[in-house]
Image (cartoon, rainbow, N blue to C red):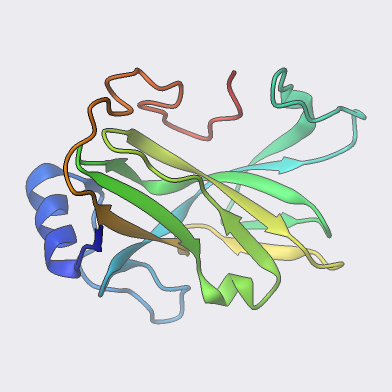
Length: 184
């Protein structure tokens, strides 16, 4: 399995709309960087956030998730309370080729501030906006900047396409738009 380079990512983004919208060169001036890098793509976080709260004394249950677990905000800067968590989504819509697996890693700018970004792998054939998970591991409030870089996606080509892709099995997160909470 090989990590695919910027030339392949650019070709697939422009010809197959694998990443839409696509930024061909990394943007850095005054922002947390985003766009095409040597062996990946730094995606942006949108202005939509869901911040976890305990105002309604809800229990977070992945089998029976309740919207009372969080508050919704549309903003340029999201403040995550100390030792808390927020969901967001990418600006970019991804269409993963059938023979590729995409892995997400956090950006060092956020990691060095105690902010961890988690995303499960994007499976072959999956498409949609990626729901991002931000954990504030610090005892202080933390800022997330909308329309700026949030994480980097690495594209790995398998030795061949799988017998059954995410699209083939009609995965529960296929085609998601907006922030998508847990589904059973």
